[in-house]
Image (cartoon, rainbow, N blue to C red; front, side):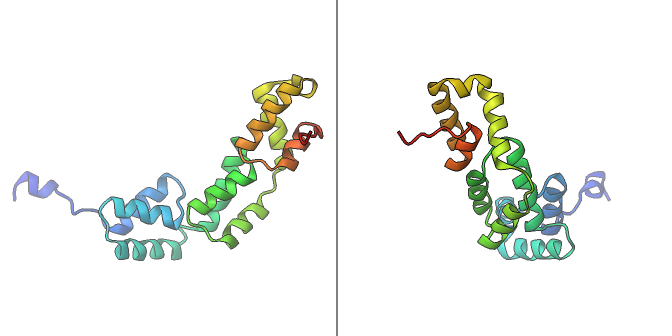
Length: 158
């Protein structure tokens, strides 16, 4: 047997490929399936591998959703943005609702901290800065009531 024949390994199975992705970070079922298919795994084979890993506890959409909510909140994204991202990952409305309800952070405090970090403490005194702050928060996925709370009850309806 030649050296090259001995050193060749069989190609990884769909389960091994999926596990390789999951040890790096959490993935939703949809995301994991998409990545496996992109790597040349047949769709039904990918689904079977994901089901096997899910059953073994390696893949869990609820755990993925919980981690994504915490991660996005920590980086200053609001609940509107987070919900949309969870849906993009193929999670159903029950899973999205459970992840959002399970989050124990304060969206108003997250919004206030983001404004303070990005624009400083002078926002409360300057209407132009208040509008900039409101635009920032809305772009980041905060609801209008959270924008008002973050800016001390400023009314933007006039």
